[in-house]
Picture 1: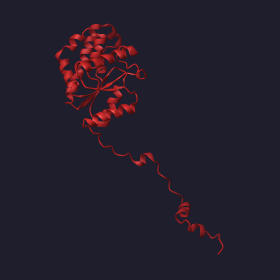
Picture 2 (picture 1 turned 180 degrees about the horizontal axis):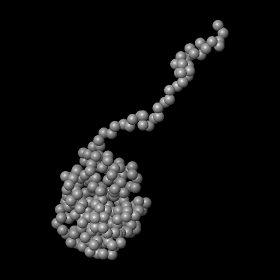
Picture 3 (picture 1 turned 60 degrees about the vertical axis):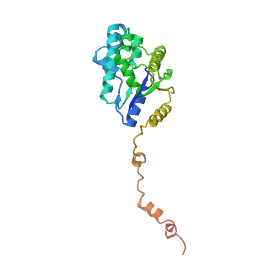
Picture 4 (picture 1 turned 90 degrees about the vertical axis):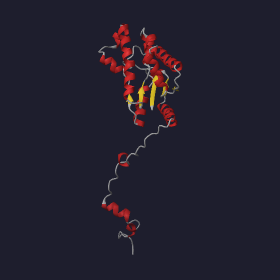
Length: 225
């Protein structure tokens, strides 16, 4: 079973992806963009100004995503999928060549067979992630719109998640996965010893008074015969 969390940056994809990975025992494919950026030994400033460099970077990110997925034999939860193509359209001049490449078209068919959750943006979630050039609300909305366009254009079924409540997000994800036949492994109840401190033993004199009640009240020798 292949599970994808897609959408713009700063929408909480990584948090949900980690939850599903732990809860269901699935391998997690982390965002590959950070690793590629480190391998190229470059930074955001260079990507903002060098068009050839940013094109190479985005091509590497897409190729790495596809390659890593194939290593997991179709059983994983992925933090992103084709998302970087939205950034290609936003920051490079080679979007047309990448999106018309047969490798991209084949990959979109592959994603179509998985379970896709589309996380929608909210201003309360907006924060700098240290990878993409620009985290303004306008840029988030543009990426969000591009991701939705690709979902619709390639007929990929998806569940939009718009709530910012983690509880509601988890419930939505668990509901879909349960209907798809993915059950959660049984969890052992926590030991009471971990949550409830042991009760100290009562002193002997107190134990005698408690255990012999009510006889101790009349055998103390202070009453009249």
